Length: 300
Image (spheres, rainbow, N blue to C red):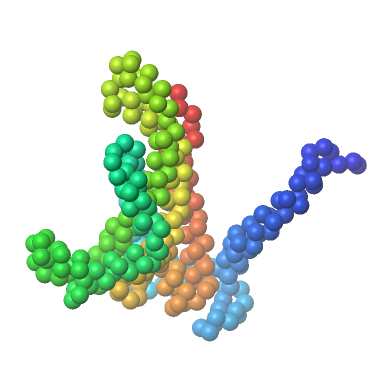
């Protein structure tokens, strides 16, 4: 049987596609496969594999969802709040910032450069600055809040897991703003001026031009920014890990930081079991966003 034309074309393209396929297999498929395998294996306290574990890593006495003292309900709630609040507020603030940066004013280039700095800096470095700034004894942010009368005395924001969680939400929005703002700004600059001028001539006011012309044209940019933000925020570890100083299983965790805690305390099997469910949960959130918002739907 002779190969068809389409099959021959695929064979010719294979040498150019091979490096990409090898890369995908090495950095995506193999780690994912290893995670699934590890989730169903038993390990000793020294990390040595001891055979199959069935579902014990999920619901056994020391399983990811049944281990005593772990507030799983609160941690799942934190995970949803963490993703929804950070992504939604980042998107709203970025829309406003991008609209402002798209105006023609003196010093615009300098301001654009200043806004991109948190993105250019290391997330660990930025978070560490907030961590030291909120210390009760030497923290500049804590002292500023006291001096301005916002609080009566210095508060250990990072020593209380719930407070540390909300500080982490603020820092996550701060470091996410530059990427989202620039993505939306790129979309704003692609809106044709002649279309806006025609709408203005037809009598449309500023608000009508924004919601009827500009915002629909921003949908692809908003979709890209939102999806990348959901994935980044969901898997974000350093911000929560640095700011939450309370050890052990507490109410400041999300599922991602809990995976890190499980790996240190209960071994790779339990950590992989939670990672597996965490991955599925992330896919569910993305699917809900795509179904509800329909970012690729054609605008009438």
